[in-house]
Length: 305
Image (cartoon, rainbow, N blue to C red; front, side, top):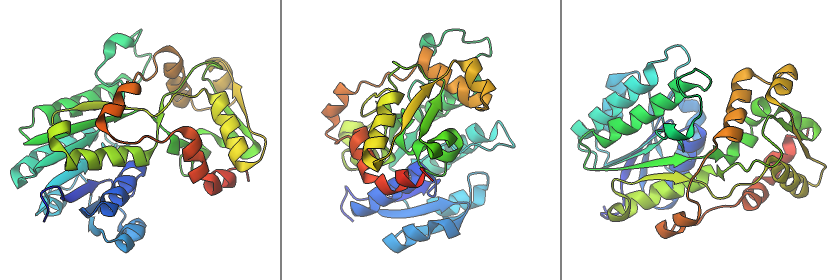
C-alpha cells in the first residue's frame, strides 16, 4: 500500500462526523473499517467499499478486534447518556489499545474552545456544562500523552449539519414553519464548519503527517449570524425563512430545552474563535454556508414540511 494510504478505523461511523470521514477517506483511496453499534445503518458505507465492524467503545474485545491490522484511527468522542464517565474512559481505552496495536496515526475530533477556560466567564459556578468541556479537554490530553507515534486533534465549531435531520428537527423545530428560533443574539456571529470539511482535514492529516503531526486545529469556514443563515436557507429553498432572536428566559418559556438555550447563551458570551484565515495554510478547501446549503438544498427543503 502507498505510504500515504491507510487502513483507517472510523469510530462512530454512522454519526455525522464519522460517516463523512468514512466517505471522504474512501473517495481518496484509503481503506475504511467502520465501527458502529448499528451495522444496519452502515449499508451506504459498505456499498462504497467500507468494511463494517459491529461494536462500541464500551466493549474492549470489539475494539481490539476492530483495531487489528489498521494503520490509522479517526475517533469521535461518543457520549453515553447512562454513564457520565464512559466517554472519557472509553476514549482512553481506545487510545491505549491503538498504541498497543501499532496504529501509526491517530486523528481525534474534539470541539473548538475545549481547554481554553480563560474565555469562559463564571467558570466554576456551574453556569456552563462544565463536565462537557472538561471531558473533551481530558480526552485531548490523553491523546497528547498517550505515546502515539503521530496524532492530530481536530476541533470543529458549530456543525452546519445541525440544521439537517436528525438533529435539525430537535434543535430547530420551528424551521418547519419557516423560522429559526434561538437565544442567539441578532448580531452574534456563529463560527460554522461542515462535516465534509472535517473529513477533508482528517484525510489531509493522514496523507501529510509531517504538516499535521502534533497539531491541535480549531476548525471553522465562516461565521454568519443566524439571520444570515435563515436568509440563505430561504434563498436556496425558495421560501420565506426568518430568524427569531429571544432572550434566554424567553426561549425557555417558549419551550426550548434549557440545555440548548444555555448552549446558545454560550455562543453569545463566549463563542468559537477558530483562526479562519490562518486555516488556509493547511491547503484544505473550506465550504462556506451558501455552498453547503446549495449542496443540501433537498434536505433543507424537507424541513419546510
